[in-house]
Image 1 (cartoon, rainbow, N blue to C red):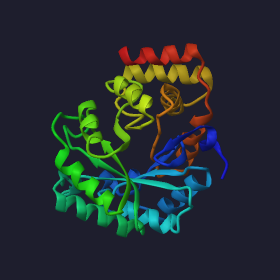
Image 2: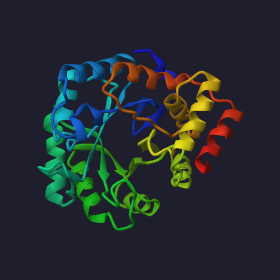
Image 3: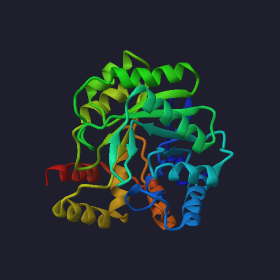
Image 4: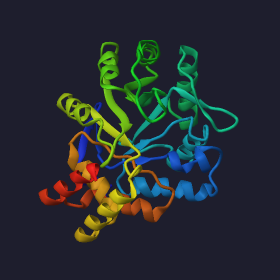
Length: 289
């Protein structure tokens, strides 16, 4: 496979992956609940992503629930040897589409087996413990019990690597006393920069940082500034925001999601967008605009 996504790579666990990946959350129905409006289109965009060189897909069995993983299996199974599927556990969906914590040993064991069954795998490559915190903001507190439960499943051979989602720096450190951590997935983008120190600390350890909501939360002023910079350099605002993330640190792995093949192509093309030092300085200033 050869395409935009091959511009740069990262050693993820024991696998070499392209830093521009794909997030599968949007393949479920509205609100990440229920089936998609067009299942064939969802299958097609997954296949297009892999054909374009994407070999890192982020998912969870609580997307749908179950729907997204089942679509991934339909589209891509049997999987290419180089494809890394990363999932997350720690929540379930209520009948009203609510997101509810599910972090007991039984909850996590059930979630791992649900992921294995719906993805058609005997072992999950990477499982992130999704800490609920304040939904999209980490909250301090011990993760010893749930992370130890996942570490035990790793010892059983059901999981190859473990990671964290929505975690603080202290929680990462605590997790590392229990089992190795290969990635941290938190809210971070051009204007949400609270994890700057954590990203640098993880980079020094060779641990991947995977930002969620890489394109969200911009104020109107910030969006206008970003659009002006994008126009100056011949890219779209979303491409420039993604390119800035790739330039931010070599351990940054991106998982922008879409159910639209045109948006997929646009996202992947961001990996080829070169940002000069002057442009990066202008982009850095957006956070305080």
